[in-house]
Length: 296
Ligand SMILES: [Fe+2]
Image 1 (cartoon, rainbow, N blue to C red):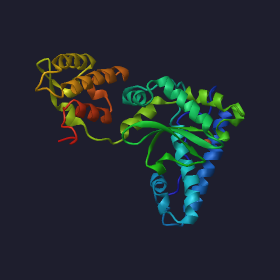
Image 2: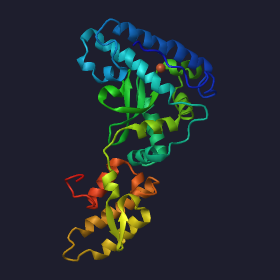
Image 3: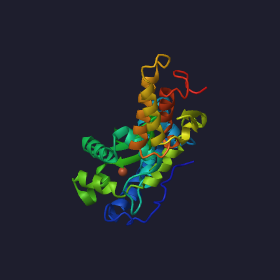
Image 4: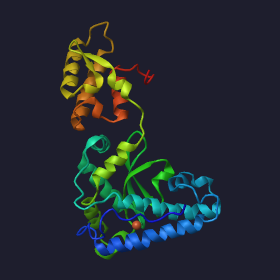
């Protein structure tokens, strides 16, 4: 089945004044269409003409030499732009919520540092390329690619992509790439990005979240522990430090303190709102699950 350019989920002028109608018409109708046409021409009549775009990008090494570059450039261009259109909306911008915000705070400290890192990465791309917020199954981070190379080829899940080809901004911003980047930050559809983040299959932590912990003598479900409970547990265990039979109590007290800090920094009401990697790490450090064995 041949690839086709998806319709924009909004009008060509919907992202004005941040991204002009003229830019969107050229970018979507001419440039994206060209990638699709070239991808279809490259794959037509080959054993790969029915392959899914993501699968092709994931297995570039398995393609014949005469096909590999054309797939990387043109299937890459198609996949990258399809994500780009659906990462923007009128009245976008602001910041994400939910678990994605927690993951961004966990990776960058706060949302402002994340935005500044995106800006810095955009400035660092020489020539044509992209900046991406990606997920590797355990955490989010920023990568850049050149041309139409896709993070999918590196086994990563792109959550958000910033097109830095001049065709994305030159008609409106000429050579002022930083102005374009700032404008793009105002049209990001964070709900769409969050949905991509939430759709990633991660390690199932439901068993860990249902385990119980004794906090001040009260059996409490691990997933329901909030910042105050974690602080209380840290203080109680700290008071037991030095008591012979409780050799590990100091490190566990510190781990409860760290959990309280993590819940605070990520605006998570309870442990259940944290990402899977953080939950597993905390549960291990707190001996909610046996260290070194993972889930049992
Ligand atoms: Fe583009």
